[in-house]
Image 1 (cartoon, rainbow, N blue to C red):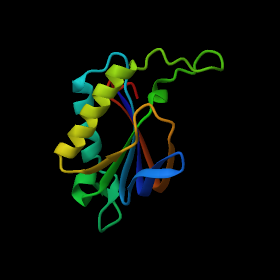
Image 2: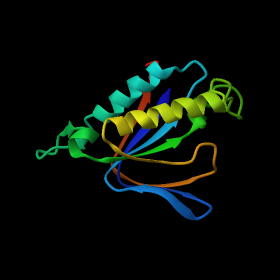
Image 3: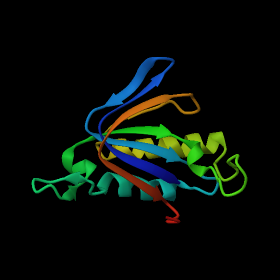
Length: 149
């Protein structure tokens, strides 16, 4: 499972020009599910992301997590995180999970955030979305449950 995590002052998802989800201060998480991923991969990323110390404390040091600041989360499914661009010019998505498995683990991930008490909103799985963010810092983290990077 892979995630691109961006610290934001604002984020939203629109579909056909209508905002379907939005947050203020918190994290936008783009989440990709791989063919080999299991619930353990989701659990690893849930805990890692919720506790990532990427928000400033009173001394402007990155010492606070999303849980510490009581921030919000916007979670967006993005299978293209498993696009392999090493050969040719067209990405291969053969390592991305099939839609049914991807949806199941995406929902599990969302539930995990909500179970931690994080105010969580989402995009809509398998839908063409427009995502707007105001990235603070900018702070962007790349995470992989298999720890390949």
